[in-house]
Length: 294
Image 1 (cartoon, rainbow, N blue to C red):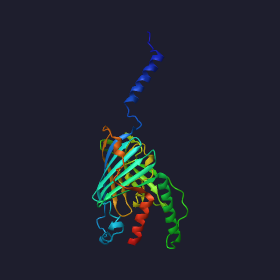
Image 2 (image 1 turned 45 degrees about the vertical axis):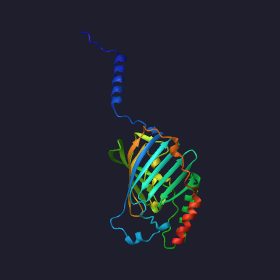
Image 3 (image 1 turned 180 degrees about the vertical axis):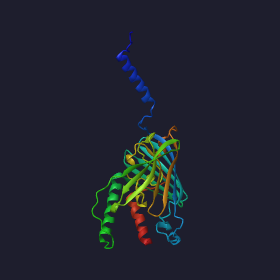
Image 4 (image 1 turned 90 degrees about the vertical axis):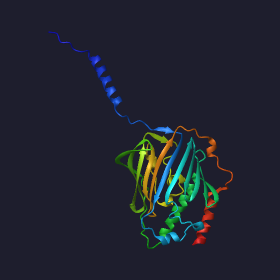
């Protein structure tokens, strides 16, 4: 009796081909597609606590009788235009309309504000923003050191933001998204946790997220929402939910991403009917009004 033994090399080759077919059918962890041109629509909702201090709302704290505590309450619509190194975000709410231009190549952010019939604009470089933050941190530190009633914390090294998976997923604006917790550590070890939903299908050039405080070019950090660490996400954040320090809650969600419409370069031209001043001048103007109000 003769037993036929299959050719060893032929057998190994067939096994390799079979395994290759099996692996090709498994979902691959593909890199997100880098997007360099897009129109992104976002909705932001700032939800006030059910029991609000009416007296505090009736005592204006800002220039022109504006109360900064509730200036962002309600729904705000954001439309972001991206083309290569240029980004423009148009913000519309009951308070008015603002437009933020970002020139990534020049590292320059220009903000135009239209409110109560008035138009104003200011610009600031990345270097100036860093210096402004350094001065603010130094001022806060000096005040704390003089306050004998405050708890004096020991010097603390900066703790990197953490991204912790939440084990949930859902579709947002047609994209498969995964939930995670963005955790930042403040002074005295207090942790701030923000719920984020992100997609790994796309990564948008020069933009980590839109809407909410992200659209203000880092100028609204004093609202108490720390979004540091979003650069660790290999994808794009489609939604986030955060508690603000003024007892409010912010919910931001992308509602549409258009990758097909061509964007004219004129979209990023700053209108000539608005006088745009350096941020330092705007600070001095608002600062004097705050002092008069006090």
